[in-house]
Image (cartoon, rainbow, N blue to C red):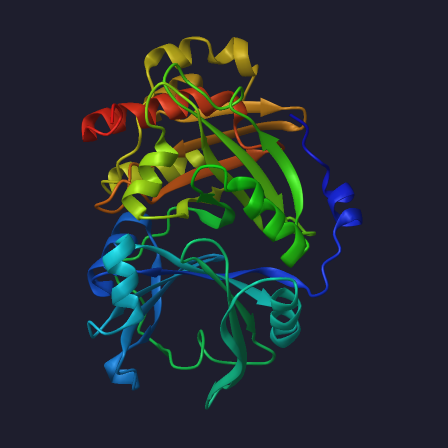
Length: 377
C-alpha cells in the first residue's frame, strides 16, 4: 500500500474548476422532523435553518443541521408523487446529494457533463432577499448526485428557500470538526469504472488502493480505491465485493440499498475519547471489538498519547502508518436497513484509512450480519 503525498496529488491534479469543499450532505428521509431530532439529540448537531410549508415550499420539508464544518440536510416529501418518495421506496433513508462548494457552478457543470457526467439539474439561479446562489447537479453512482453550489456574496443563513430558526435548545456538540471522507459501495466489478469516472470527470486522482488481501476475513473480502481532489478536502473510498466464502458486507449493502450508494460518512474529531464518551452517553451504539484486539495493541501500533485502558473501555480502534497514527470507531447502522453508518475518526499525523483495523472492523460487521441472518445467504 502506497499513500501519495498531498504535494504529489496537487502537482498531478488537473481540475478545470475549483472545489472549495463539501458544502453539505443531503439525506432523503421518511420523516425529517423525527430524523432531525435523532441527529440533534444523539450526535449534537445544531438545527439552524428550515424549509417547508411555512417558507412556501409545497413539495418537501428540509431541516439543515450543522456542527462546525459538517452540514447535513434532512429532506422528506409531502406527496407520494415526489421523486423523493420514489427514492425512499427504493433505498430507504439515506444519502442523496454530496454537494460541493465551487467557485463557478456553470463551469463545473459544463466541464463534468462534457466529460461524461449525466445532467440532473442544469445551472440556475435561486434567490431571496439575501442574494443569489447558482446551483447545478450531475449524477454520480446509483441515485447519488453531486450538486455544485456557487454562493458568491450570498448573505442568507444557508440557501435561498431556507429561513433561520431560534437557537437550538437541545443541541450539545460532541466535537465533530468536518467530514473526513465518504465511502461509496458498488456492485460486483463496478469499482474501477467509478474510480475512472471521478478521475476523468472531476480530475480526482487515486490516493490509495486496497485489494482483497488487505481487506478480508476468514469468510468475506472486498476491494477499495480512494479517490481525492487536489486539495484533499474531498476523499471518496470506493468499495466493491471480492470473492469469499460468505456474503460480504458490500453485497449485503447493495442488496438492501437496491443498488450502489453511500455506506458511511467519516466525521473528524480532534478528541475522539471525549467525542465517543459523549456519543455513548447519548445512546449511540457502536460496533464492538473483542478484548483480544487490545491485548496486542501496544506491540502493534507502539506508543500512543491516549491511555490504552480508556481506548479499550470505549472500544476505539488504533492504527499507524509512516506519518503517524489514527483512532477510529464505527457506529452500528443508523437506519432500519443495514446500510448507512458513521465513522468517528481522529488523525494524529496518519493520512491512511486504518488498514491494520480492517480485519477487526469487518469481523465486527460480520457479527452484525450474523445477527441479521444475512451472512450465510
